[in-house]
Amino acid sequence: MIEYRDIYKAFDHPVLSGVSLTVESGERLAIVGPSGTGKSVLLKTTIGLVVPDRGDVLVEGESVYFGTRGALDRVRRKVGYVFQNSALFDSMTVYDNMTQGIREDELKSMRAPQVLARVSRALEDVNLDPGRVLTKRPAELSGGMRKRVGLARALVGHPAILLYDEPVTGLDPVNSAAVSLLIRQIAERSGVTSVLVTHDIEGALELSDRIALLDDGRLAFIGTPLEFKSSPEPLVRAFADRRVASEAAAERMEVTT
Ligand SMILES: Nc1ncnc2c1ncn2[C@@H]1O[C@H](COP(=O)(O)OP(=O)(O)OP(=O)(O)O)[C@@H](O)[C@H]1O
Ligand SMILES: [Mg+2]
Image (cartoon, rainbow, N blue to C red; front, top):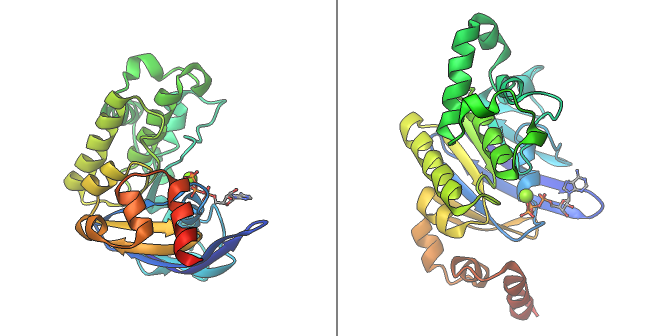
């Protein structure tokens, strides 16, 4: 469904150094790893928000970077993206932000009440009351509410692929549990392919078919939750045992020196 082929990306320093990874159709893949290791950058290469220096991404066999004209648009239409920082349009109401998540051709074919029903349903799915938030602007919402609007906007288009960048980080425990449950239900109900970047290891182990550990711009591990839990790899152990990233890094230094 998604194939990352030998992705390299540097900004002022190397971030991704040859990441290859295949996500199967209908799979739930979690990506974990220390802060600043390139998880968000990798996710962004899926839809051209970050262009790799080398390598390519294929979505349903279609090359994002070396494909035919319009490939990127076609890929973007298949993908719902939950941004780490919500990425809502500040000048627009929640309603207008939400309609951005529906494909343009589909939106044109829908009547206003249908659009409203669709938008309201997606907001209700993330525990938001449409009556209270639809006419608000993002600045009038709490951080957690903005986060959930960002999630609802990714869901409203019923995409074949969902990319989640830390969908529960910063949410209170009740909403964090509700959103985790929702992600699981969406995957089970619709068979959508999902890639979930998260710091919530416990959630990742519960929610995903496979876990990828990204470290220092490389794939340090990929396997099932069971393999993750039983891997002797020190970095994996540090993560599986939910010790902090800096500790894991220190341990790795000891191992390699
Ligand atoms: N647009 C950009 N311009 C310059 N540097 C960038 C850009 N985007 C990311 N970086 C750098 O790339 C590195 C990886 O960033 P990225 O956001 O992918 O980390 P991450 O693994 O998602 O971390 P976190 O867990 O904190 O979200 C960081 O050093 C970051 O500063
Ligand atoms: Mg990130």
